[in-house]
Length: 364
Ligand SMILES: [Zn+2]
Figure: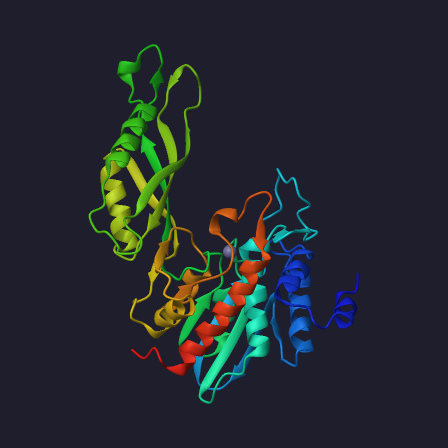
């Protein structure tokens, strides 16, 4: 189908219609080119200069103090268990069904609608970026696009938060553990050291680990075993067990401190290595103007923390709030949906965030 010609016949696509158009173009991570193309023509049709960089789309309006609105174009794969068509954007009453409707095409559509209609005041610049590879963290997404966007003073990260301002987000520290023992014949267990039994007590000690520092929005970190592999033969005392430990971090600890705490809890037979510490925990001062703008825009909604990661982790210290239409628990599930009213409220909230931030009503 020629999407740009169908767009020309339908120039007044509203935000909920735009969500549906975006859902109809499948965009699992790595395959965002077609949806990026569609969004770029949608923006160009509204007189904006849409920049394409890889499978990202961005626009910039005005000059000066800069607010970035960003969200992602990619989705997780459709997966199993759907009772609704996942890529038709079926509308039933208020519900728009489909993969990516909630995470995060509703945010993309609401942000695009706001930047299309708003003109930043003198001394202000509004940037909108719709990026790829958010769900995988592979190269090519926001971290690589960021240098092209120029200096950014604050950002809104569009993710389904029920339009509650999220001011802190946990990070991810991935640890790999090898628990060592000594091989022996299973008939003479006393001659070996059983790595499975050692791993079992190490896991129980990890479960007993308590973190002392509590973050005001995120609470304490978590550290849980997610993969275990060990043993070769049914009649041999195993000498090696491998574990993966998933640690969700908070800004109250350096990742290296958490690695050490986990290693100490696991005990002397466990060797711990860091597989990834790229996704850092982030938070924004509740008194920062971007938080105040988000709170004002949501009529004083309570701020909170979020355990799930997003591209916010890659904003390199830019003060940010995660905020968007839809609900996090619907993401990555079968029968994902977003409500038309949520999208419309998303537009109203983003519009007000921009107004409040640039009005300086929220000065520090
Ligand atoms: Zn998302």
